Length: 266
Length: 269
Image (tube, rainbow over the protein chains, first blue to last red):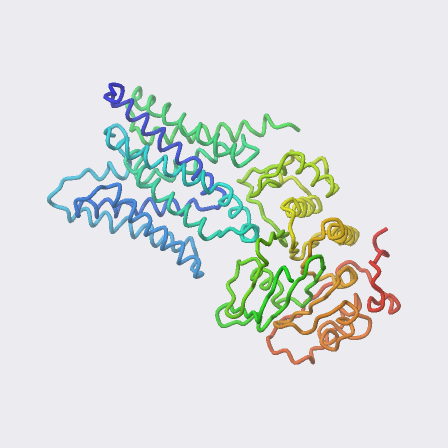
């Protein structure tokens, strides 16, 4: 695996892996208007990073556990009738704050917190790459397996119940997929930009798509393209890698949303 | 042998009891209508039947392998979700292109296949919803105020279509409606609901039952009844009885529904 000895190649593959998982999941996040839910889950993950450093365990596991706990708490509380946006605000930012404070107690280890807030895709190791692609495959598999039920539940809860599905279980599957994606992506784009990778490619794909499947597929293409172009741009212009990827995605979003109305048939 | 049995069903939301002690059953091929004022628990009953609301008491039993077709009251499709009529018809059950086209032909909207759901008019949307429900070849079709948003000829046509579907496929129909005057004549059986089953039976029996009259007025049954609410029926649930008739369509006393099972045609042509 000589090819993986090149850090740019590892970074590109990591970016593509995250983008492929984020596209179908992000499409559901957009359709279900869960954008801030993704944000909150990601913020909570920094607490998971702190805990895993303190307990000396894998960052992937720690981040995923806390992200999952966060997502489940929000799901349960919102079902009990709390206002969703207020609760996300409270939980997300306090989890982030507690995470940052917790990290400061870890005097023994010097860690670069910036690496977790903004990601450090250029430092991705072969082991990280395995975790990223494993997680991405899991997320894609999970969503592919439940696609029809997820889509029906997203469209209308009663329609799903009448077809013998359980929309609440499908919601849990999305929550689980979200936690895995956050844990996988934390190294690549960091906590603060994970939501961007979830939301922007599907939003950019929306004007180009006529069916849900097409939207997810186009989002995956756009996401992967952003990873390649963004990294290249970061290399050439000497800019931070994660944010560069997000910037490219934002530009594509602007492009498709301006271009689409012009090309549409009257 | 019944498709669906509801036994002693009670539903509570927090402190609020919306349904208590409701029992009913649906046999193959019959058209049953649930009528009742706003807040009488009609939609809660339907939600319990499809399994979306857990009963506080009692049971909902489906016949083994019962196929349900469900037409919701309204369906909001988020503008961020692109979906064509063809894709919507196949959700969640795979159906062939030909079957989908047939379903649209039967619904009277053959040309909509490649249109976006968000681009449909209210009437087209309702036809597509029904076409989708029928594609699953349901044994029991559930309609929740399915004609809301349709004008008078539109909803009359809709109910004629339901009768035709029943004739052609033999599926049973359970529907909720506010449009008493149309619905009563199209139903084999009417269940009058107001937190519990007030009365039930053939449209003739129900429209002459004292419980029904107490709820919807005495005298003519049908449209005029909507304007006469006598609240001396002893319901203490605090429901608000807010019916509007909205189409400026009135009946003479001679046009009452009780003795006749004829579908109403005066407003159609």
